Amino acid sequence: MSLEELIEKCKKGNRKAQEQVYRKYSNILFGICLKYSRNKAEAEDSLHDSFMTIFEKIGQYKSKGSFEGWIKRITINTVLQKYRKEEYLKVVSDNVTEEVDVESEYEDIGLQTLLKYIQELPNKYRLTFNLYVLDGYSHKEISSMLGTSPGTSKSNLARARMILKEKIENKTSRAIIGILIVALGGTI
Image (cartoon, rainbow, N blue to C red; front, side, top):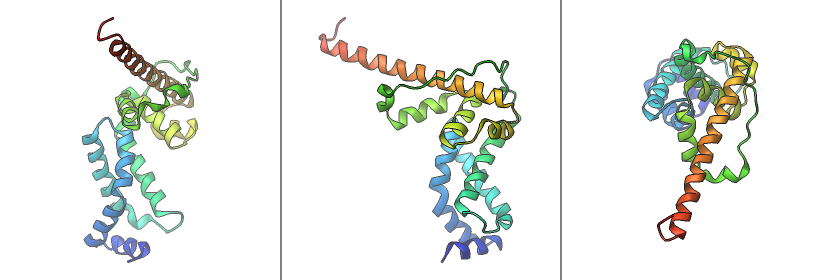
């Protein structure tokens, strides 16, 4: 069955077609939910909510643009909606806009470790970091999506980068100390 046929059947409420769409896209959308969530359980809840919204609004899909892009956008908006109204998305001051680059010597920390560090970021920083760095939204778009100002978006991104850089540097420092301890026979 073609994707167009599946979509048409989903528009008519066909459960088997919905199940096929779920099976086809759940891993991709779970990855999106996971990068915006604090943990796996929260990501699973967001995935469920996303598919509920997708099937509720599938009648609005007009086959303009890719279906995958459309459902990804719904998923991102569903996850962000959970955070949009919460006070901790606001920042006290918009004056921190320093760019912090993670140096290339830290690039080998591993994807799982990096994902863990991103998930540990406070919500306002994690959401802004993911939207800007991973999904390519502008600060203007992010501010609109999160209900903040572009300056707040820039500030939150800078702070997220600083936190991530510190975590990566600390991990690297601990690894070097561990190597030194082993090299020196277990004592310093």
